[in-house]
Length: 203
Image (tube, rainbow, N blue to C red; front, top):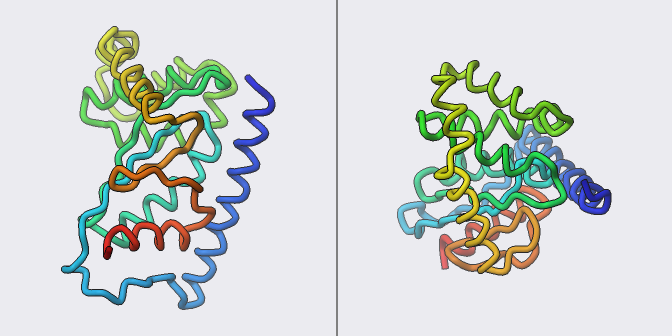
């Protein structure tokens, strides 16, 4: 694993995680950051595409922000995940395939969240064995999961998403597109991300 990539990812993780903590504390003090004075019925639907790597700490740091955005904006917001496994992380591509294999049995979201939650566990080694244990935990058909994990179809699905990202000049993770427009500088906390979403929603 590239030490430079790992260091940059962890620095980004710390910065973003700090922003999430600050936002949470503001929420508890009565300042929830809600800036949507505009009637929600006037809002346009917003779609966020996130090119991401399951091994990337910064990608993981955005998960609570994404969930809060979904809670805040409801059906006016859709967040879609795109696989972009980086070469600097050993098990990234396998992790992407594990999520897709779970999706074949209707458990994409659960596996997606679990893989990010346990990032430090499987990224240290024995990744496939650990992913198999997650499949068992979710009650998936183990034989089908293992078959799908190594299938050409799943491999190609992951590669297509990465190739799509490369065509869109994605070079690192996470990279966000909102309604087709690339976010040039990733927001460092919830309030910044909320403002960007509202700009697109009420423009």
